[in-house]
Amino acid sequence: MALLRTDEQTIEDLGIFGKKSGRGIYDIYNRASTRGGETLLGELFRNPLSDKEAINRRSSIIESLAKKHITFPYNVSLFDLAEKYLTDTEDNARNKRGQQALGRKKYKMA
Image 1 (cartoon, rainbow, N blue to C red):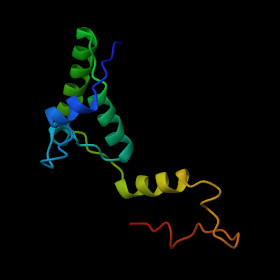
Image 2: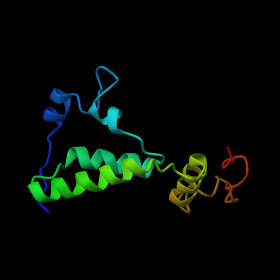
Image 3: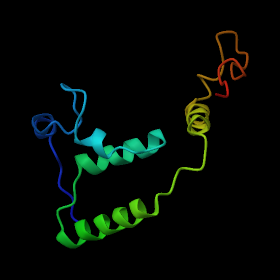
């Protein structure tokens, strides 16, 4: 699978992420339910495919998923909570007195 690399000047000139206008091509296609999905979509825009067969294959997959009208069956805030918890390092998990800082105050269920 051959990938291209889109440089920052091209991304800005094409308004892919809509930094100036607040609405770009990325925003039109972004239906991600999690930060991980948004990150993946951003990478797809930054590193587009260059192989015709790979482009057609990916397009067919996306089209077939879109036709199914599948909704994300989970509460998105739970994924944000889990991501925040899992990315906390041991150092960040303890306060200055060495006590555990992970608790209900820091990680509230939405």
